[in-house]
Length: 318
Image (tube, rainbow, N blue to C red; front, side, top):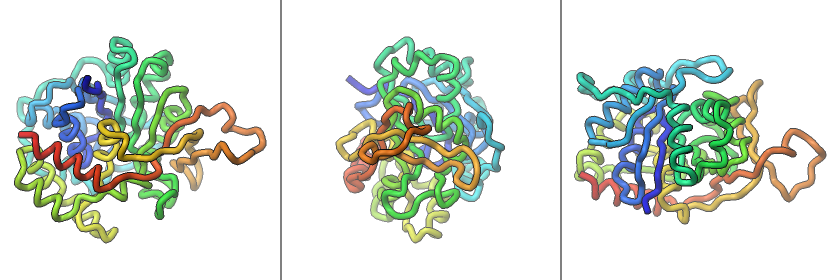
């Protein structure tokens, strides 16, 4: 039976690639798309999701989500990464787009999780504000979801740590209070962070294969041109596969290894946005970690396997 997925996203060129991958995957039933501010403002990312829905015939409804963090001060969108329109400044035909679902994203999530108890996987590749709002309004959904997979965090397990500050990854620092709530709730969360996503790279050979694929594959090549230019500063010939790696975890978790332990997020100061997982094997005095539930963090990845999964899936799509 296909995995039912709500994709919580802020498209974003890498978000768009992950959405097209999930939509093309035969083992995934994409039941909803919820938007959140991040790679662009909420109006822009919602428009982008509706544009992708229409252009690629995606059946899933789109629900507009949070436009700002729970408590953190807003920061300008990363136009140097995703362009001013969020999709690499491609020319978009945005006339006569379909409308969004009338429910706000957090209410949409609540309704679908309650209606399909134990069946919904939430794949969150943006700020975690929608999920935190859903938990605040309906705490019972924590016991009803199948799993929550987050593209976010940096745990310092494989070289460099954060990508916004030395310790913070963009999705987490964008709303650290929401992230601390999501990781601190008793529901099954897996963080697929920079420690593994930086190991998966779409390089020239992969891009050449996408360029002769279907419309979705060619769109990814075109929309990531500026994104690839941004990655040159890191010495990467291509781009890191951040969001699609989290999507791949839902499709084939055997490609990843994880470790368990409580996760907390720093919400203020110089370390704001830092994600830290406690080692249960080390004895500590009583503190703020004691009541935190164990969650999973991806610690290693079969990078070739993830890349091959994504390429094979997109190559089979029209």
